[in-house]
Length: 228
Image 1 (cartoon, rainbow, N blue to C red):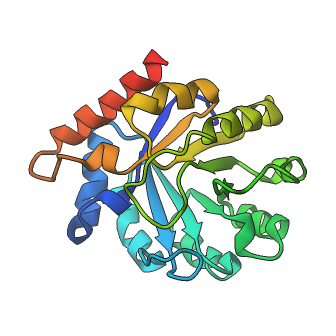
Image 2 (image 1 turned 120 degrees about the vertical axis):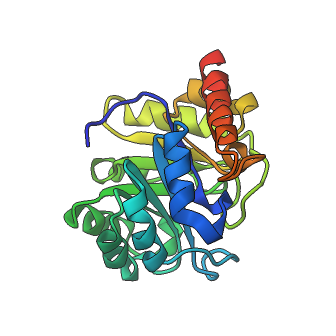
């Protein structure tokens, strides 16, 4: 997978029709999505319960591009092997979710998958510089994890800028997850992000019967990003 900083739109399948996840993955890619973002919640690290590795494995054949797995789970080390087997291209963890973040990131990479680190709104950048050589993606959470449909937290913008400055020319994606809409996409990209995760902003108003709405929503995100 060749690294580049061109804008990537990653619809969160959490906002799709759960009864037809494979078809929804195909639809958003056909309508212009770059990645498909899979939010994994365990009901412990975060309140909600969503997908497991079995569901991700079932979705994988329907995703031509990148499957971006975000583990919002306790003890992520126990989950990694199953999501590697399910076909994840990226596996992102939270530093609060296990005792040895560096070791967990190394184990993801050792399995041949890109490693990501997600930073909650209340998580600072202390110590991040010591992990950069083992990270392929930093996910800035612009909402508190665990629920879809929340509003963007503005303090994420200076955090994104600080991370962009910290990583310099390293090949690390900056992903932003939570409350991303066309109206704030420009500011988010201007701060330094290159991957926008969007659930409601992509799926709202559309369906498998009307997938062109997904395409218009994705185009609106790109236009908002370009305007900024």
